[in-house]
Length: 448
Image (cartoon, rainbow, N blue to C red):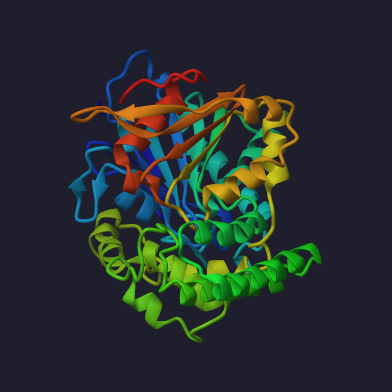
């Protein structure tokens, strides 16, 4: 399918771009001095119906400070991998995908001075709402498209706030959009629940012996107490200490896949070398963000992609402000948004939760813990429902995961997948996306 879209250039003029080229992209100034970069990969599947039936998926990456236009696009769900190599199971087979470098300062997004970074999830949601309004003004053909927000990691926390902002704007008649729901993938919804879940998770996996278990449990409880006392910056510092304690006790278990240890071949030597001091919040943040800014991706984004896009200001480099994004949000990092998700469910918004079986940082134990706190009227029936397996095709049907749903809440557990589910199980992830976008809320998922 060939489509043509208009997009603003950096000088404000409007040009036509044929989408047989590699994506459509641009900047939106969400606040004075705060510029958000976006990249649209148009739908490339078969059309049944009209163009208004094609979903638009907004992809929000994690971190905070990880780039959707970089990592999400070129290493997870976009049509090309690093080096412009075609991806077999790209999500553009099912929808148009809009990647956003969010919060401002992430990826190619940038701020002109240090006062323009965001500091709370509410500020992030406000920027995203402004972005969406301006994007739809420039691309009105998407106003009627079924709109879904799909997220990963800290992106889920941001997605929950963004979805709430959309619903509120619609109620004010301040936004016209066909909003269909939000999907929260391995998402940092309730930090304390994840922190407390790491101890039993690692014990069950035989990664913590008694002495180390006691040390980890003690720091986890201190983190919980700091949050309870309202000391959120202190809680973030304790989170960093807890991750360092666990890493030291487990021979550097991989936070994104608990089957792995001492992973360094996909990380950023530049970012890791800049982790000064070697402990504390800054070091922990850089270790986690290093995967999203690995050397191959950084070279590609600051080289071939930058040249291809042609509108990046000369003083802006991909990922150049990303560490600062995390620093500025350190006081909000440990804030729980379970009530926001609960409110979305009570408002009738379809919410999908999906988790990788092998993920440590947002492990399923922690996800179950915050979902048990939901007060939405369907929570009891949802928890009582039985999960059913779903499959992908192979020499024989392989169990890809388990799925259950009730009313407007659905949950997927993806087997043999860590934090980055589309990378670990691309076929199963594409099958899940198709079910979210097109399938009815049902238990009997077909074989992909």
